[in-house]
Image (cartoon, rainbow, N blue to C red):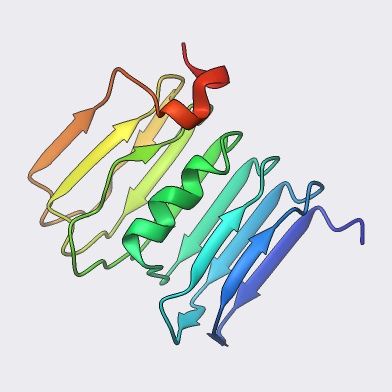
Amino acid sequence: PQVTELTVQHMLVKNFELKNWLQIRKLVLIDPQCQDSKWSLELENLEELIMENHTPPVKLFASSLVQCPRIQRFFAHKYWAEEHLPSFYLPNCTDFTFRRGDCCEKLILYLPRVKMMNLDANYDLKVLKFLKQGHAAQAQWKL
């Protein structure tokens, strides 16, 4: 299929895996509820990731971001992780929103190209750190 945008909303999901869809540029996840601990994105041409009321397993989510190095717009609303989030590596992100990340005390980000950042209503956020070094797997995107 030549689908460039995919929306998944208001459904129970198992074995959530999206990979090798080179044409996907935009992914919208609105309240898909994970029923297991399997979650993976490998969308190397993904440019826009929008998540609302969705909490993928934190380590799998962070490793998936590494597999999607072209993300330019990242939007997360109500990512309520019950454990500490690992570092997020988004080497091409220019527009970053992480709002209502309740329970998130620390964000560690690699965002060398960010121009717009919104951290609205993260009531528990105590630490915000920007990394100067990118992820080794994204070497071609390092500045």
